Image (cartoon, rainbow, N blue to C red; front, side):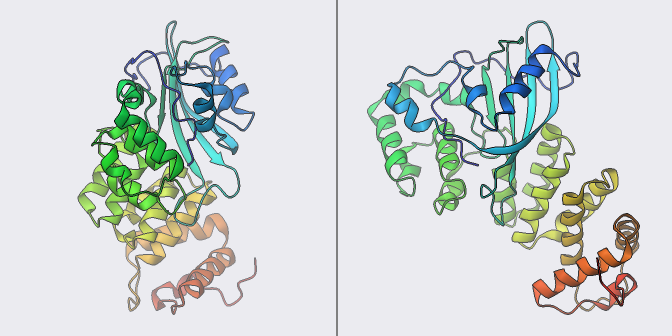
Length: 335
């Protein structure tokens, strides 16, 4: 995701309190105001409620660009008399996603409540960009080294020297990753990131890319704690697993996630594709778990639709459908 509004930072570094530690409000003035801002399809109204670092207006405008999204969902919200916290899923506008990155992302915001709510915390779960952490780098950003980093990032985000120019600082590196989202420089920025202990989707993606199953399990646990069992989070997990050919690592939790949320078509598709990817080509009989999953999916979608989906998958993979799947293959595959 392209977080171009990157020099807007908070003036107060208050720790975010987890969801569930305060009174949940199904609809408050604060939540209504947040929804109204997000209904514009841009983060600009929401981000305008936080104090911007004292930088020249021209530089602020250069980095303050639109993040376009078509729809959104507030997936978590807490409020008391002094604070609110919200977790939001954004469905990006067409063209903002790629085959390897789902067109959704998650953000967390917090601040003081009310119709004129403020934002003093902003965290992007995709890139790990934390504006509170970025604020702590304000003095460095204003130094010669920081200015050199920002100038290079602005003029040449694909420059590999950015890793050195960041001088091991996690917040500027997250800034780089945000700028390179869905661009050729993304891989270099991803490899340069530093783990801050905050859950982020880039860490899950890197764990898959590094063939590190232990790290994948650890990141899945951390992200589930932060995001809950959001079906779109599991869809992203399936995309990463398929891209790096590690579906066998996550097929069980994907199937379990769909079992809990059977009406999510995106999750059903992701779970099915990973389930098929994990089936050995020469297997003649599916195991009990796989059988139960496909039987339930057949009941949900209908036998012919499931059969057609399986057929399309193996045609796309240019592989022969394993004999173990014959019980779910109809002779006719019309929709």
